[in-house]
Length: 446
Image 1 (tube, rainbow, N blue to C red):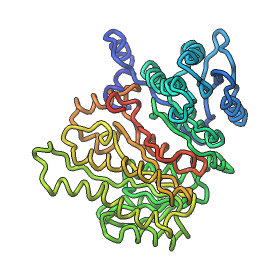
Image 2 (image 1 turned 90 degrees about the horizontal axis):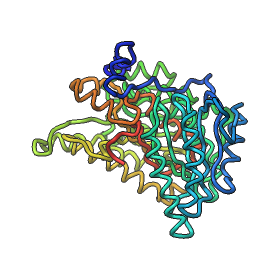
Image 3 (image 1 turned 45 degrees about the vertical axis):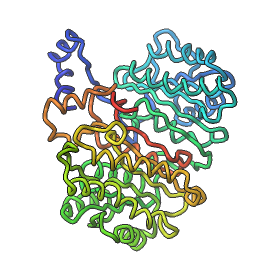
Image 4 (image 1 turned 45 degrees about the horizontal axis):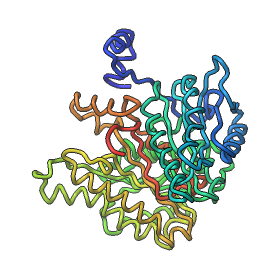
């Protein structure tokens, strides 16, 4: 932790925070390969037939986690999973209140609340659509009520896609999702094979990460390698020394390359095929900022940001998503930003590029050729992440940025990397066209 968060966790800081009613961030539970999925029993219930609740109980059983139907006096819960897939009208939502409300009092620090529903667009009646859409409002509100690092998220599972939900449940229940809060994840496909080993879900995969020399890009390479992938680490020649350190650390190869080069996509593909035999995962992470108020933004600052952050991705994708690019069943993840969702003062060029990436994800989600080849394209949108870049923000602005979310702290590069690793798994093939905010439920944006 840094700055304010460190101070309020000292003996003096704790007293002062209590007296002034200030938020007191806690150390979040993050993933470790030898850690259990959750640190205690999980309350599982819902409304009606609860078809997904049985799947949740089976998953928990595989991980030797106890599932309970009610909270015993004095019992502490690691998580609550509420299956509301069978709601027919707003009156049915009381089942969620009756289950989750009392359970929240027993939730441990860094606990998890996961609500399961069906997409409103599939509803048979107006009342059912209203009830399904209401789940989002409830979940986002619960996220703002939780304390001590706990999170709440909603998973909408399309009819017939129940078999594709396991990786998403594992992600949201585990420490991998430490900084993912109040998000809506839609699972639309059930063809999502489980890995032989859930601790190595990317075993045998070849992954490319651009902007991998340092910061979030280096963390992405670390996590993908930890999960079994072979890495191609890409960055500009000026970052060659740092890039080599990243590649050596993860046991991958380094490719010094400016992503704005006309042949960047071809060079990445040739390297991946020539050195590693093919390509399964692409993470478009490279990006720059050139911040100025729009009135003071010249053409060079505008075009440089759009060129690196967006136009280069479009050009590279012509090759990487072509018939000789990503192998069938591959995955692409784009790193967007909260600026692309909510905007940011002095970042009209950056926000344009990051919002453009979201538009690209939405367009590729409906691409018939990619669907036929079972290639998924998703995005993550980081909020305030503790990096070298954010450390240069003026102190007061930096502290406000850290606190402007439900977890009252900045995230870490590993939080972005964990989310990308989840979206890169074959077991997550049912998640496509999704934009997941890694922002601790930022108070800005939707």
